[in-house]
Image (cartoon, rainbow, N blue to C red; front, side, top):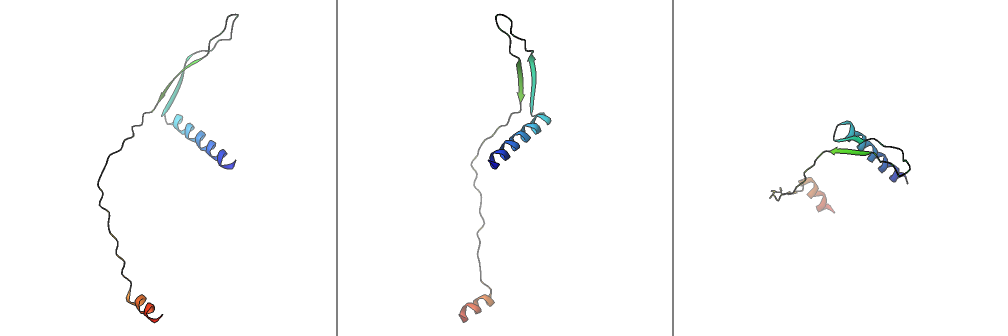
Length: 81
């Protein structure tokens, strides 16, 4: 339960930051009207959201090798045992 509340709080915080920084811009395009005898009209919104392009590419990366040499003092201790 605690984890769920934390996740919801983080999502709300990210949404507030996205709106505050202009990454998400929501503007109302049509006003709502109360229903008359035959019905009504729901409000309309136009949302402009940021665009994120994500891609992958293959690269060859040289990985360093690691060599471990025991110190002479460690080798002497191992020999005494």
